Image (cartoon, rainbow, N blue to C red):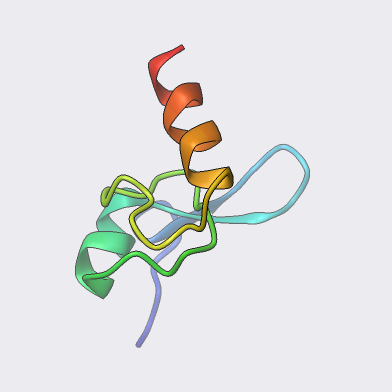
Length: 59
């Protein structure tokens, strides 16, 4: 799979690769890593981390 910068990913202020929501939608499932742009409500992330991530989205 050929990834396109600014479509599938971008680099944050620390130089880390951050996958976009579009990338995750094409992948089709939550990987469980707590990704910044997870469109699946972190469904595969174990508790208590999942609840913490969901709370961050609301606040």
